[in-house]
Length: 118
Image 1 (cartoon, rainbow, N blue to C red):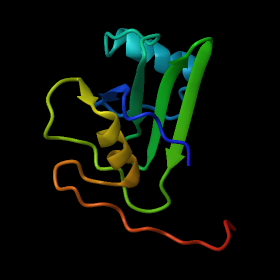
Image 2 (cartoon, helix red, strand yellow):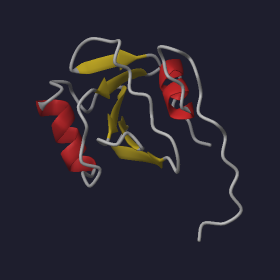
Image 3 (cartoon, helix red, strand yellow):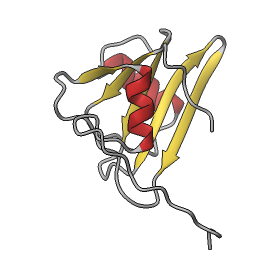
């Protein structure tokens, strides 16, 4: 699985985001709503209202990269114990969030094993 470096600065958008937004819409959210530079050496994380989808935005040398994950069951445990509109996480905390950990309680999601999609 592709995972971001644990050395990156990670900004988590606290507000839910419409997952139909693509690169331009997400970059504009970073710039306008989060008041950050989308071209910084940082990773920007967005989640939907149901917290079962997550998008990550990253500027890589000559273009943006978007990474998308959808959970089949359970929800991402958005950190509520941290302050601010844009929360700073470590790369390790982001990986824990992607694995389903509640950053406050440190409890992961259950692993799922499927045989087919349809």
